[in-house]
Amino acid sequence: MPESPFLSIVLPAFHEARRLPPTLQRLAEFCEGLAFPYEVLVVVERGSDGTLEIAAEFAARQAHFQAIDNQVQRGKGYAVRSGMLRAKGAHIFYMDADLSVPLADVSKFLAHFAAHPEIDVLIGNRQHARSQITLAQSWLRRSMGVTFNRVLRLCGVAPLHDTQCGFKAFRHAPAQAIFSRQKLDGFAFDVEVLLLAERLGYKIEDLPVEWINSPESRVRMVRDSLQMLRDSLRVRRLVDASLREQR
Image (tube, rainbow, N blue to C red; front, top):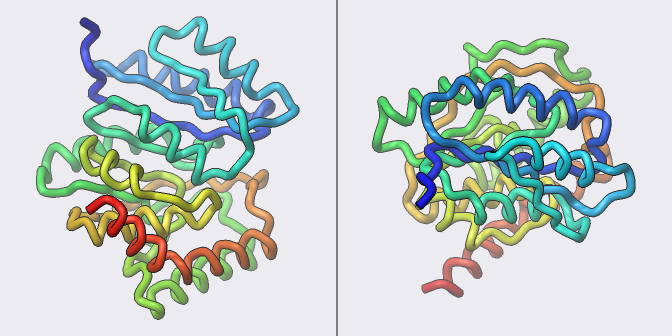
């Protein structure tokens, strides 16, 4: 019987034909140096640029990589949820296809899990005083992100400083409990994930990260920000409903 992976990495991908090949190569090189079993799940939403074919071709050459065809285009939240529920690792990460947070931070997060067995969920915090930011976001994008998190905290939705950093890690059991209840398909899914973790009693901590901003962000400034805010303000109702359904 194959040994269960110690580490799972979930990579959502939509129209990533240009960025995905170097990302997959960097992931393969990073994982080759690991001293424990791992898996990489590339979850591809339906698109027209050949992202799925690229992921499938690469996975055919790498025993521990899987290309998952989600067959629909529903949003990042749906893609991440699909991968997290299929992941078998004792520790499960999801991260952006541009690797804005370098892979070296995976080892830092795993070390923190090992040193703090009481922690269930770790999230990257770009606002942390010890975070290192390269190629900073535009003033407008940065201001909108800060304002978004401030509104969430004022509404009592998310006490953490950076809900939207696309680099998060979970122990296996909390990941299954959280993502089996998670419903939002769009970019605001992170808020729902963290609120579910909190309501289920899991211990969450944020850590500094190195962040290399990608100018090719998939977030549409006004449209997606407004949708994220609308989704976030109704997330408490979604979480309450999810918890009632599974009692």
